[in-house]
Amino acid sequence: MKSAYSDSVIAIGALGGSGTRAVAQMMINAGVYMGEPLNFANDNLFFTCLFKDKTWWKNASSQDFENRLVDFETYMRTGKLSAKKLEQYEHIPWDIKNEYPPHLFPKLREAKKLSKPRNTWGWKEPNTHIFLEQFATFFPNFRYIHVVRNGLDMAFSKNKKQLFNWGHRYGIEASASDSAETLAQKQLDYWIKSTEDVVVKGNKLLPGNFLLIKYEEICQNPEVEVARILDFIDYKGTKTVAELSKIFSLSSEHGRHRRYDLDIFSKEQLEAVKKRGY
Image (tube, rainbow, N blue to C red; front, side):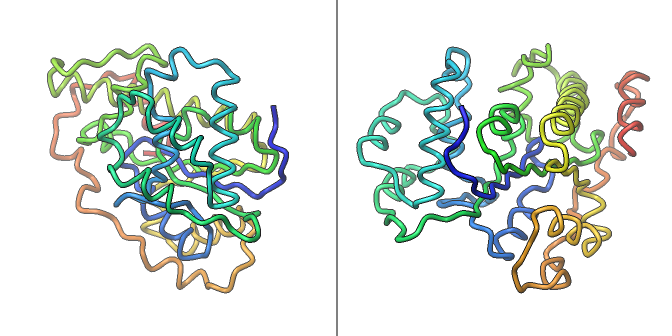
């Protein structure tokens, strides 16, 4: 199934904690509608609500997924979803209620329908890459930006939600009882396998419409990388590259892997990180 519309749709994803918040903010500053309400990390909370439920995902048919895609598109294009639809989603026994605030559905119900639908819009939600194939199939004019950060830094990140939610997709089973060392090893495995997966799928499914951005490079050379992004999305706005580049800077957690013993990782893991340019 494909969307009936030819909107320009731009999505941003990554392993959580990779720096997507700033990329999304740059998009917002450029005038690209990224949805609402958003959380502190600029995640599109309605996307989170619809697609981050791993319990639903295990049993969802392709038609179930497409139905939610249609509803998400309707809301993003028109600014409004029917009360009946919202009630249907609100009463599903979500296993991710803590991922979005209690005011989400009141906000969605209060939204006003636009007089004219948007034809350019997007979202940022790290988990987007998990469903890349479905989005690439559904949206005829879909662009995807994947943000990657040094896998060794990500191995020691406190944000391991994707590892626990989706690690099984790559044959990785993580448990809360795992030691910190074991979790770091599994997180690095997840980074290696998920990055390889998204690069292969992005280039195959979205030739010319897939962009890989390194967090470190956009912070160290913001004007160069922002120019790449604006060219990628065919930006026609009035903001300059210099204006849109000001928000990027390396966080205090950059290079955190230097505080840890890297001997816990295998030679193969370290080679895989090196292969990505780190």
